[in-house]
Image (tube, rainbow, N blue to C red; front, side):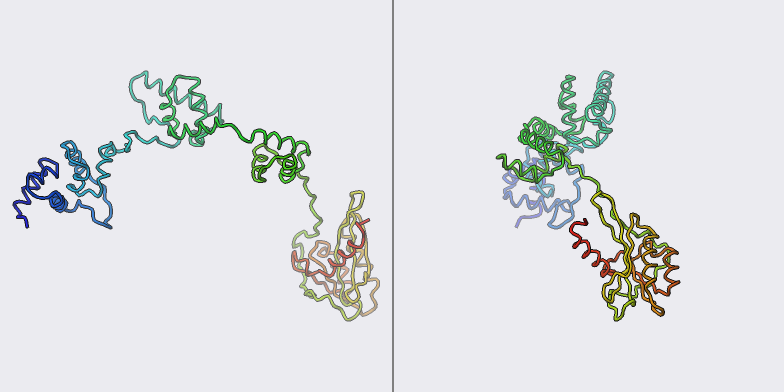
Length: 401
């Protein structure tokens, strides 16, 4: 065991020389013991496992710099001052001890939308040079890239602007990269990408030729198949990407909107009395009605409005016309009511089309004692028996001719 006086003398020798090995040799103790004493003497500044990291103050950094100037090693300084890692000491010695610097000694290139120069530096000539540089950058951003601000420019665009400014002026590269807030490594990478030869140059020409030859009406699958038949092996994904880059977009004709009789809840809707049970035990107990559209060979359209009896599927009455109007729907219902015998008051089920909610239709139903029933909104299965009649009729119509 060493006495307190021996321990004190060894620590004083260490503080005087700043070298663990030399102080240990002069004090007659081992270097490991001296390091342990120095770490213990550092007290609260020593980092412990799991403890929250606190930034080292200027006083600790100053002591570390002073010991380094006296020849102490980074590990020895860290152990003497209770610094968690000798790497921190190395970082300070390389310039990281000052705000904004890094291990390489050069400040990190700032990024953002503001000019790199926060203010004017140097004399009048330097100020003029800085102003001219900022004007050239802004003018080039607008003329070359149509960019409104530096912050909206990508690194590729900044690289193109730097190359343009280097051709037009004798400004050094470092000045331009700092002003546009792009690192030199990023600039060199983007510059190499811009100068790289397009390996798909011929493929782009072939794709454009095939696409234009088809009148701009065929997609990437057709183009890919044509390329394969021509002996060009390429992925479909590449074809899709190149077609998008070349602006090869297929022009589609807008499909005309299908006929829809729904015009909103223009009147109170009666309840659904049928509930998809399309069975009737006698004629004229349950009727179904709807309007369907037919496309004629002359590109014109015709509309059919039948009234169907659920007892045997008989078409009680029907009207056909060129317009899906109230006269068409009301006419077929009036014709059907004309077939009723006294005392027959069927349920008439329909969808929620506007024809079945207008006063004319409601008046015909009330005048003949019909009970109205309606499907749920947008639910075609609620009137599926009538829809099935339309489908069967169109299938057996051999192409609607």
